Length: 317
Image (cartoon, rainbow, N blue to C red; front, side, top):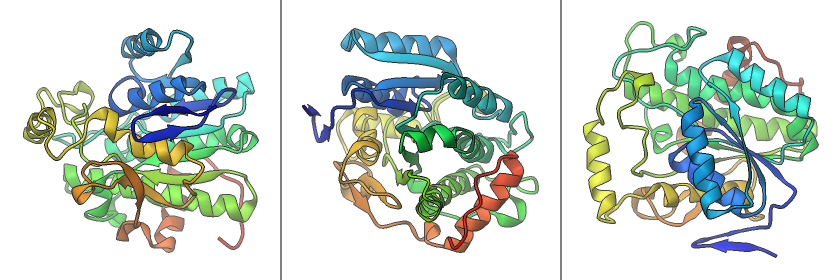
């Protein structure tokens, strides 16, 4: 029996395991709530345990029988990624859905991860890249759908191939765009390699449009002590129902991409409204920055080296 919610029909996910990064607030929490409501076992890897506990309590208030669990994960640390993968591997449970949702956005000054990577590239892209690589056996055994959250920023700027870590001249918006282009290229290449290698995984992309989330609010981890002017503008308009989405509507493209029988691998799903800022989810044309298969193969190879992980070799991709 299918379970319903406004705009999205979610199949019954009883018996399925879903891993959702960044599920302690905003879009990720909305996603975790909807997966739990549909009967899935939801694994919530979080950086902040207290926020994670509050998120679990919120889910259980509306869905008392929800099967949700917390795990520690800091995507800006490759050791933390490896530790989570080891814990989930030890549990031996197939993963049927992985939503790469967590991210950081536009630190005012250049910051680096514990591994020395520019914070946005290291967290948004390399952390998720390493997570997928290390969870690959569980994803394969679950015939998983992997949905990676990009951004309208992936339709801007470019990958700074000569200085991926932005050591020479840091530009927050350009570095954020690069991180989301890299996520998109990886997600598409993952689908191509899965098809070529018979991995049994489907990989696609989603973007939330523009919504009043916490990405641009005060966040100590990115060195921001107050919301950005852009955040205040978006929150003000979203509160009046003008133009932009809310976390609940912004999560719907990822929910559709991850769970709909009609969503396919190698595709991008986002809001269908004006300028794709908000509206019901629909398939969208791939951004021009994501259509270069050579760039996808290049970011894959670079990422394997930087993250020190290896996927199975695949020929003719």
